Image 1: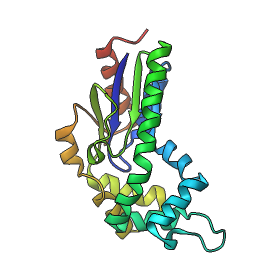
Image 2: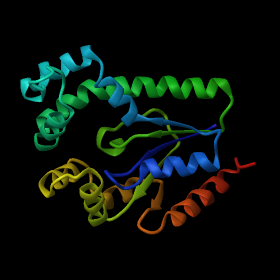
Image 3: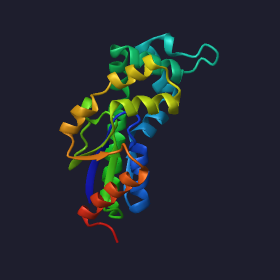
Image 4: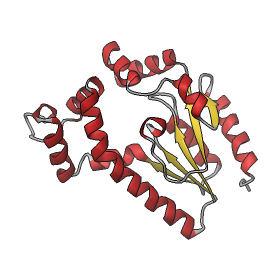
Length: 202
């Protein structure tokens, strides 16, 4: 079984990459760190820990629950808050990733395990993967997608990108780079060529 770490930057197209890969290789297992984090943020005990670390500013005054919007604003504008949040969420996410990898390897039902780790290089998130895969675009494309897709203003969009390593640096660190600037079919072709090199397609 092959194991890879998939990364990129905000709005570079990791989700699209994973979808295309599963279309071509349905037996692959994709572990999505963002989905795990989203679930953890709904846990009341985790929420209490986050509020204790970051303060009441991330609480929605109406419901008394953690506000995703306020949390996003806080962590992308305050590096100390971002670090505190990562110290809470990253160990739990890595633990689940290791469990998923072990289960996939033991079951023997999949030739390919990929963990989608947005902050792979920034956080040193290591689960014993063989190689790193990077979905890359220009910063200009990231900004355009962020503002059109999520409606973020310029300041927040820039802050979100500044919280990650520049794509140019990630290109130097990655083992395999998939360039996602053109039509979707171009990305599909890159993925197909990659899977063919692994010789796991029927």
